[in-house]
Image (tube, rainbow, N blue to C red; front, side, top):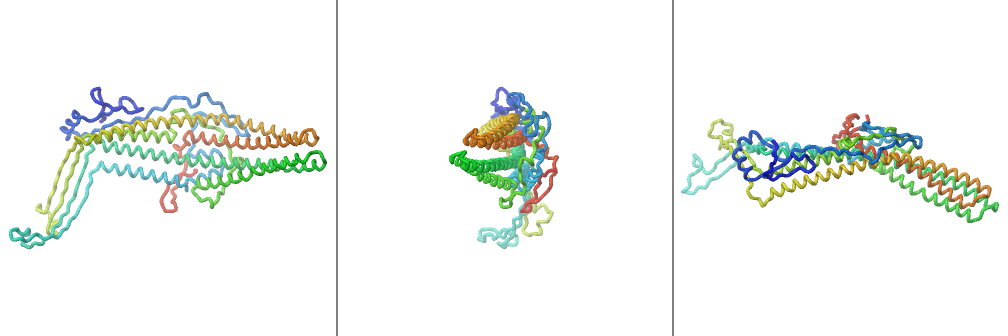
Length: 531
């Protein structure tokens, strides 16, 4: 049953939960009747403390303004689709065989994922260990001893034969049981079950973070390759222009300063190439590590924008679905549940504790008599005990207050997690909405810069502009090329961020094939692979 308060007793109200759920602190008017009705309580136990109820999802819009379709840019079209579900293997929507292969390998070999799997097994085993408190504890013992009695004249020998030496065999079975009268053990199990659920959701979060980081790493590699290609393209152009200016200098049409300026521009462009190549090497090493392998093993996959495609339809969820789908929100909810159950366990600890014990065994001087059914070798004991803490320096009371404060803390953390999660979703949706505009503007700027460079070069050949104008046109074109690559990368990265913000489809993982494999130490692992 649920212990509830009334107007005449102190109450503790659960933070963020229905106001009808309350707890009471024990006092004499509660404890004494409980002691008097022990037998009834043993047959019909109650559970003190608050019963957890799932907090209601906030009824708010995901973005301040209605969304508009991202549209077409760079030859790829995207639109928002309300109500569509996210597949468990959401990364396959990018239609990249290399990305699929890399993530499949990472799900098999990544050690962060294995760590989370092991932590979940620990949590489940801890729950089962606590469930053992519902059952009696039974132990057996056997104690053989060889003894010598004192032989003083005024002492009688302990044996019939009169010899001071004798052997004693004792075997017994001990049974101890603590009835869960007020539900303290049940609340502890409930708390551990909620903690295990939180750990399961932490595993889902690890799964989502891993797959998202690999997808983002692939996009980052494609971006770096695009920047390298753009830099090499401008280097090629600047080399051609340097040859042209040297010919113009030989003909006396330009000065040595113009040639030197072009040489400086070429050197500056060439200087930008090594940092990009270094960033590419570091990014590929990072992807190898995410897959659970050593950098020296290399990465067989190669990522560029030509081998990746944007998903055409982007999911948009209602606020209640966001709360259900986000593993961090669900984990915070489980932590809130665990904290609520601990309040009940702390209240139960202040109430009378009941203990039942018993033992049965046999004692004999001769070992064969241990199996003799005669009653003279048999002994047994049955005992019951009720203990109520009268004064402990307010220790149990403060532990209850600490549990209630922990409940308040978990409630605040839950609310904070929800706020941040909705911020993530709003950011991702609005960024995706504007990424199309940014890419279209970048492409228009690149085309204009290319046209400007071409016309400036033609004008220079006719002697109508200076070499300085040509240098400026080159720099504008290089910047425009890089901006197109970055805008395209942002569009891919923000699309990935949207899938991550909406939970990544972990609830649909049953739709993909699960294979049983073993790691290098022979431990069995369940790995989710693309079906």
